[in-house]
Picture 1 (cartoon, protein in one colour):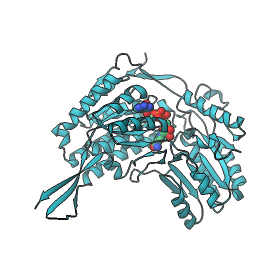
Picture 2 (cartoon, rainbow, N blue to C red):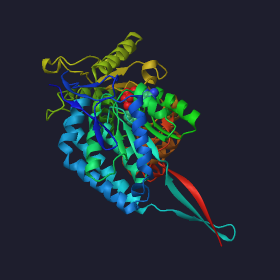
Picture 3 (spheres, rainbow, N blue to C red):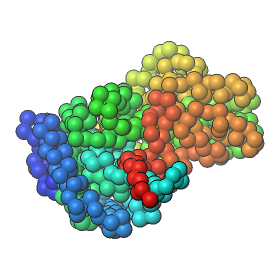
Picture 4 (tube, rainbow, N blue to C red):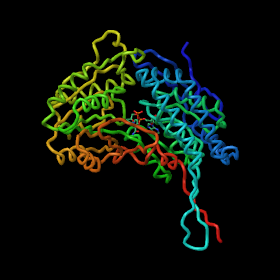
Length: 482
Ligand code: NAD
């Protein structure tokens, strides 16, 4: 018997909405069905909004002192840690991430709740400079009902980085997790109830983006949507939001340049480029998917990178030696494979990979080998489109001006990395790159305390940090006549 997981509205666990197709959670490492998940549609979306709308107006939540809200967030952090095994396992089964990465992400999700508990307790209102005989203040208030929509690549960390600040800010949240990874969000809903969060303050509605997702975004009582996912979905959501005059936070796709100058520490740079693209099977919004290497060291970097890529242990994600698991779904693996095949047909060279592994133990899974492509131009489709897989486009550059022009010639602007021995050059290039994050002599360092978001088609707004809480609040000016 396949388990059927229920969804969460108003503190109650419910079967799926009649007429809406259930989600079938499949293990991408083996093709086996994990479980099925009740799905919501437009009617349940309306019920969840009604529940959230009512719950966030109850004095028990609306007037709760920040220190008491923080106490609930601390308890949620503890709950996440005490369910670490179960949560890590759910993510591994649903998106195929290797075990140690799942465990690290659970730890990170708990830390996010602790961070926002701290921000919640310490971030205050402001007295603004008076320009007359009055006392003026800026206070920050919740929007009310906030919808969080998340993708499948790192569900726990994305969900935590939206839900924790939105709750800290005093909102009620409706989480719409990805159809591929609905279960960690459901577990988080259970943990939040156990931690004392009032019913209706966090509803969890798995389902299809075009059904429950679209219904939530369009609902008039939803006052803010925080979305992480693909650029085209983000654009559609922004269009609906524009008609409602509703603010949105959009964390979207990327095609991030990872740059190596000829004065860099090449060993570290190569290790970083390989990690930047192959960790998580390249299914990371900040994956360094375009590597630009200065011409004098290009051949050496290519040689070292190919050796590293070939040495990566691609294995079942629960195996201790696994460095790379499968792609998150078979459909996605096939899409990545067809993009690579098309690039090769257009003249690119596969230096390694470009196929599924031969290992019989992996034959039933959605695996794809670490792949390095050369011989393309930066304006070729393969170097411009987000692949979201373990595929690196490696290109040479001549000098700093050439590099900056190529790196910025992209619709995306999420992240970037620079390897150089010169801090002056690092500074110049960091300021010239059109990207929300620049890493210098490091890559993929992420911190809940530092703002994160994209330039250009990579998004609108910034999550994380203190701004990450302000995102979920609106400022109100108050004047006391003296
Ligand atoms: P996706 O856009 O297909 O789906 C993301 C979520 O949006 C899912 O929950 C989906 O059901 C929902 N959705 C889709 N259409 C919707 C609509 N019209 N209305 C409301 N909800 C809708 O993305 P995905 O395939 O799940 O994730 C991969 C993408 O996410 C990649 O492009 C990746 O770069 C991006 N991503 C970005 C970041 C970031 O922080 N910038 C992080 C991770 C992933």
